[in-house]
Image (tube, rainbow over all chains, first blue to last red; front, side, top):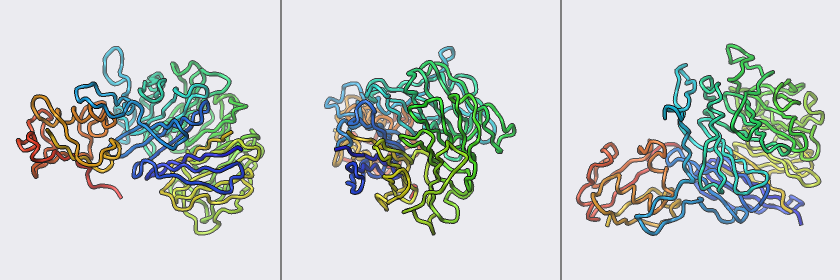
Length: 392
Length: 98
């Protein structure tokens, strides 16, 4: 029988939630890596037993964990115990070191700092892990300070795709309030060379050659906090979503504004329409209806909670502009949680499941495309990310 | 034999219950102790010293024999009591956060 596995990253550990296809009763395991921040976990589309996990800490830095059995057991690839103290260390799986200039050996580029000066790149953590669509051992990592890394050996070692930072606009990038993070990675299922990424606060970028060369794709974005509101880079993109059947159509939740592109990001137009506020973080697309999209409007960039204390998912069945609140089962008073950018996901069962996690520790699920909702768990630590695996 | 005490999260990461004991050939310094620790437990690489710079991470401290040795150069010999195993070399996670 089919089933669903939710991978929930929180401020204090990882949780794995499993149900059969009815999605009525859930088995919760965790916390895994208790006490550590789990920014993101994601399963391989090519092997659902292979799951990658970003485990980090302000004290102890970054650890990459990997499961080969659907989240039951975990290992740090290459990080096992070596019994002889004179053997060479093998713990390269935690090593994210930016490329330097091949000519000078110095930092490839600098970025804009809060005071307007230029600042060197400094690795903080992995925000997002995106496994290859076809190879369980290949996985991409989006990191803070913004960069893209790739592992082709199951997470043992990581190499930067430095063409992104080095393409020319890097010195204009700057940190958002949450840091200068590369948080979104979308792989084009029709074109192995095409990858979309997004950075706060730099914007969206695309490669068509597997990561060697990149270009900004921000035409049509307008940001009031920029001196040139239509600048090539500097936009605070919060998240981008795609339906796999139409990879040229992208939906974006920007800092303010919900945007849409029909040409792989070359041009964007606003589809906020009748949303009560177009600030927010999360956005996703229905598994079977490419024109049905979901956002969770948040009051403002100064007040990160729902309007009027009412937690409301808004659904558009027209690819944007026309939105309707779907609220059955969601708290409609005294609710002041946030829904972070990587905290919404959909399953691919016939009746599409939609899930999102909150900073209040709830994970809500809908087994009917958002018509009705139920809290799967109430009291986890603040949720940083939610991903779904639909199991055969 | 050198005794090393790790903070809770690094003990769980390295899957050790208590103190770690290490044999060190040559001079016993901060650097040689952590080199040996990382060689034995590769998963700890990057958690005590930054991968790129090799410097102590900001919220990590090194204590031994009632002294804070965090700001000593890495090649400074550790106290004799640490080198003989009478006292542990303590890796401390700073008290911070909530």
